[in-house]
Image 1 (cartoon, rainbow, N blue to C red):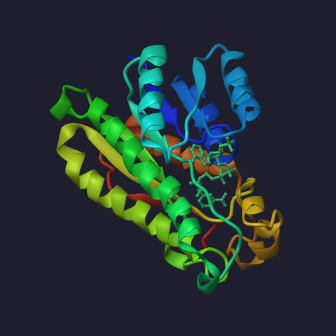
Image 2: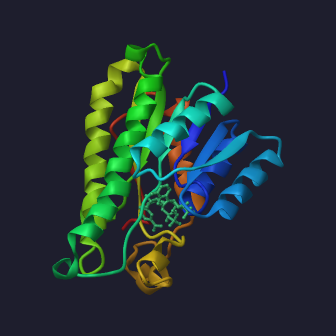
Length: 248
Ligand code: NAP
């Protein structure tokens, strides 16, 4: 039986590393992206060029109908879904809470929280034995920010990741007897484009000396933890979070 994986936001950064590693382990992979078609197509080409199966679908995880369409396209192109990585996530420009408006906070929660919930819903409807499915695994991308709070930078983002942690714990228990494991990976400071979105592309290098291991991490190091949680080797692990943060 082939493993079929959806990775949201799989065109760049951690999601792209997850997609590539999964394909190397034999998964058929559907990545979603928001705007960057070229990056997503490059990930697909790198997989199919090695004989793997992959598709890219433009779909905003914050828009329910687009998520429904994403899962339907993966069904018809790749077959029965066995794994979901809720990776798509955003942060906005560094700011103090007193300078945040409701629109900004709403955007961050719509993508990071509502998007993760709706994608998880679509996965459960396909995987749960309650719905005639054969089980599967979900991994959510949290952040060490959920515990550290990101003061002066993005407390809204940190709070959205705390909501992802609660989704992980609650959904894990809700579907544990239905063949689905739900876990999270909590990265620390990883070299990706997300820091530029906050207005500071060099953020990892500015703060890396505060990391016990004295360095930033790489998307591939996060992907290893994600793939282990998806794998049969993690068969008795659910509701868990793995920190990939150099000790931070
Ligand atoms: P990134 O480099 O900024 O890439 C984000 C990816 O998500 C892109 O492929 C982007 O699509 C996609 N995306 C953004 N909004 C989307 C939406 N509404 N619908 C669908 N796709 C969307 O981010 P990253 O650093 O790899 O982060 C991946 C995950 O890890 C996020 O959940 C993030 O919060 C978490 N994380 C990252 C770090 C870190 O230090 N990098 C630390 C902790 C947690 P386009 O390519 O089309 O723009």
